[in-house]
Length: 292
Image (cartoon, rainbow, N blue to C red; front, side, top):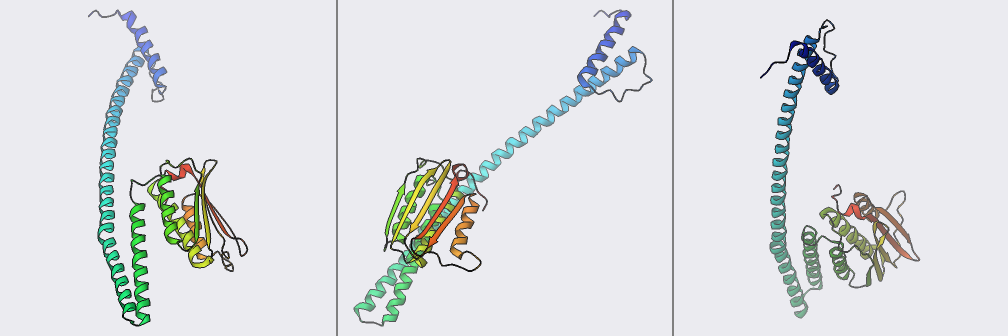
């Protein structure tokens, strides 16, 4: 390799110095006593070498960080899959074991009540057995609802509406009931928590109607209000009893559910027209996990 003449080295060193200054823009460390061009060139070359080493280290650190993030992501997905498998096993055990036992208890109580009636047994015992049968049946149905809420296979708005219909037919069997769905988002995905809070909001509203309203007619409507899913529950009962200085416990529970879903809750009630309950939740909030 031919070595450039000394006369060329000085301009070359000066050019490297200028290029390094333009690329790095950081020569505050340069001592003011360095006055000749050769010294500036040496400092510039050392700076470039140092910065190249720094960039190589940063590249190594960045690669290691990406590998760590990838490994963490894979481990997290594996843990989530394992948790989901445990969830499914618990749901199956609840349905098979506890559900079976509650069903058997209900059948035994029903059979004993019929025997007492046939043998003209004490009415008090027959009444107690009837209550036992009802409690066992309600516990079994509640357990089935819990299992349904945690199942991944039933996580659309359409699945929720169908479960609402079944629940209302069961809980309001002594009333006239209708459910009208006008939502075009029935295939929209629901997170597990959103599905749970929506369903429990609905059950709480029906429970209040059963226990306090003295209504004989209930209508439910589901529709889209702009970018929101809207649910309305209307009864023809005697309204919500006024509680001085505070809402009734049933209304507070509904408000808590709506707040958790980041939704808008409305209630209008009086003795003449009954109670109208409305819930509005943005569709974007139904596909993410709300805070528990």
